[in-house]
Image (cartoon, rainbow, N blue to C red; front, side, top):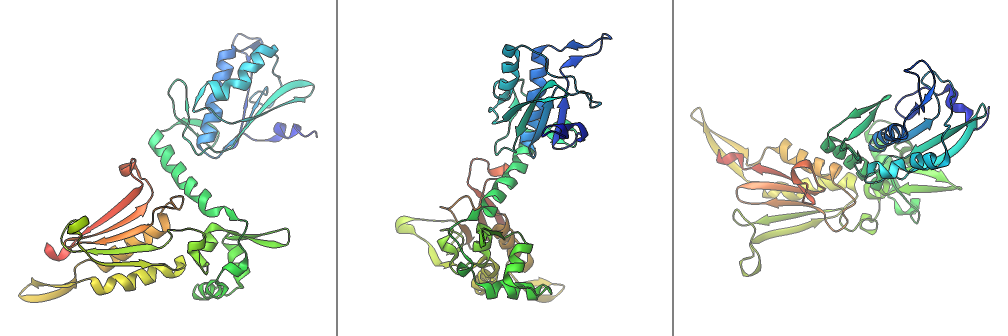
Length: 344
């Protein structure tokens, strides 16, 4: 089998598609119009780039028969250019020519893209199994946003070594989970590290989770707690900050330390219930603690100039985490707000 014959036994699916250049509708094999073939190329590659990438092979029938790409060179240039001329923004695609059974074939390979692509006729498509499915642009963007964050967190930091980690912290975490293992085994199990050329390469996530000095790898990976007097932020001569504290620690310790910092500032309120006074904290414990967990877990670590901030006012608690959402598309922040339930 040659280096391209693998396409004959490859099933169409999420990452693979084949397209014919021929039309059999009139009982004989006729070349399809160039514009139709170019449109098919653009549709499939845009859908793949909006999903997980993939390969399109031009010149093979649906049943696997090799029919070839028998067009003059000027028409082939149209096909090669289709990912750029028929898709907005243009796609970066690797195009390769080959032969199977002596017939010319064109291969198009595209990676998943950080951008949302549409065909020039205005359609947004997503590769789902073996189909190019119309999909709302906002939903494609939401999926890509998650991938963009993962790309940042899973990138390897070449200058980092195991000496930059608190390895005891790694093993303690494994023990708490009931799966004792060496630090290296834990890091490998969770894809936080891998062996490269006899050395251990660490991801940014590993350094933020277990680093001796996480700030060395990300300048704003801690949390700022700010308590204000009143119900709004004021600046200058009217500055109304009562307490400001910066909490820095590896992420596996950070959340608990933030809890410890905020808890003393939560007031207890009395409320009359069925002729008895009931005391409770002004904010439900599970709610504000869960908000901080989500802020740390889902923040966008591409933003190095912004950190997580917790603002406490007389009537509410706000947790702000860097990263745009559908409701804050023009802002680098996501915000959760908790009203003081003791005021109900």
